[in-house]
Image (cartoon, helix red, strand yellow):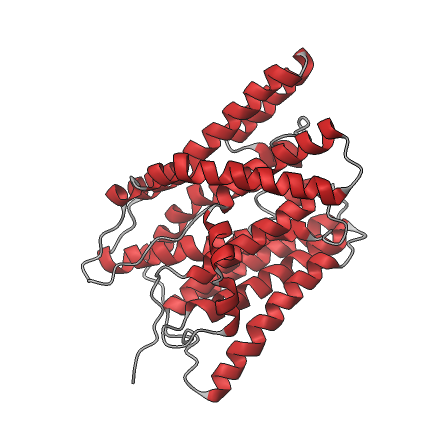
Length: 377
């Protein structure tokens, strides 16, 4: 019988999923009235990042018996820092053009918080206001996860745990983060402390990681879709999950506690369902995988890091300086300008830096080399 053991490879649909996630976040910041829940696109990124990073680390460990921290952190730096330096430089330059001395001082503070990946703690404990780079809190959480997770996973692997035990530990840690978030809310902690802090937002990252462990084990086969029954599952289950995700974004969110306790874990859960159905099969492409593999969504996914970096700055300038009364016009201008900025960032800054990653890529001994798809946000 053909083996369907999970192997990390380039999967276009994951770029498409990333494209949808960044569109949701952009719509939220552009104040599109029927997408009040677009902020959950960040949680799709978290689940996707945890899954991809862990899958690649597991692949490296299975082939070489270890994880090269040096190569991992160099690859992350090449992926993240060039574009980040560019947006920070642009924000500081812009502050000298349009802001007074007090505004420039505030912009410099938030630029430093972004540069050192601590903006989530700045917002969690209300240390000072952030405006043009306020969205960098999610990048900070991912970077803090990237710093801690390879060493943690390597330690767990060194214990020679069975994959089912490893899965249980990681999934339990993810659920514990969600439980901790609920406990803090019940205890009256400020919502910013709960929303922006690393300890309360690890559920998506860790549950995505747990899914990667699950698929790499013999506990569950990746979706194959050879039979009519599994093909029906591949048709309706991931489509239902994707529809539920969009529905969550459309419905109003009257109280933040509901979002933190129910909406966010729900979006994480449906993200994991979609990931399962689009990553496992090499012989059958599910309908939702074909949708997510649309060239437009793939392109948005590839430039999603630049889109995420630039869109809020552009939204702030468009809405603050042009005094637009129409959200339609504001959204069109913001999205168009963000697409241009992100495309330039990808082809001029990010892609040349990404070409250097191959020097620090794990080289498997087999002919079927996995293609790194990990990206931020």
